[in-house]
Image 1: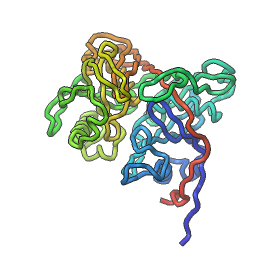
Image 2 (image 1 turned 90 degrees about the vertical axis):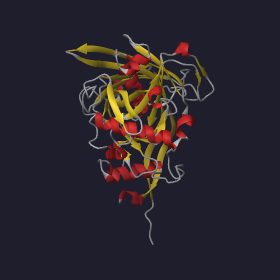
Image 3 (image 1 turned 180 degrees about the vertical axis):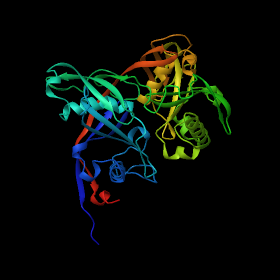
Length: 394
């Protein structure tokens, strides 16, 4: 029997924020995978090592968590005013599925650096020393993002002293701004309400803020679902009943948001919406052992990604948090003490994060023009990723 040899594809393995993934230039992909469809999905699944019933990603580049099972495809943008088009694929771990329904805010921090290094940004826009602003078009949700990338002696500066909770080592700071971040699938508040009553079998009827900003997100109060809001991953991810409850909330919230027609469709839409629970400030010990004081934060937030409690916070969920926090009356705003605000500092399992937002009321509807946060990014490996050639004939 003859087996197809491996094919080798130029790729870069990068950390962005508290996530990492495999980055590709669209033009470097095999011709068959340069268009969306089953061949591209099959290729990316094999790159990551999914589906893996062992949940380890031993035979791929994935890290067997939602934060480390990610892929990015970039191309020079033909859209006026933009440098690069950014397409994100969230690869399922135990299913043959790539979710294209949303963005990854954390990996956004690495997009600008990759774009510059791979000549997707015009050379005249890159200073010899200083800050390069990369204008990014996020294809999944049809939104604009800007990233400020430090440049030293004409190349991207990755090293620095900026510390990000959830990342072990310091690096250069990258400021990311999400412009007009209400998600491309509809209104910021799809039901027209800042707070809805969400009825969930086995849970009851609970208040929920359903928001499209950064990524569609369902916010509920921690105490309404039996939590304190200071939980760490081990408190949730080792409890199958807890995970099932949170997934049920997510499914019924997705229906109420109009993202799906029936809860059965939630299984094929794992990346969005997210579900998160909020609580007032409280002391806790982060997963690193760092002591977090209630005096240093405005609220606590815990969020679920791809069926597991996230080890820190998804960048897109941070956009949703920052947006909701600036709008009086949402559950996030109430947990932070209520009132008007231009930024929020929230606690997550790995520490804290500050997010700024500009919200205003226009013609009776809330709108947020920009959400800003600082992240960092670093190249982990450059070269070629190898996959068996028969992946191109799924």
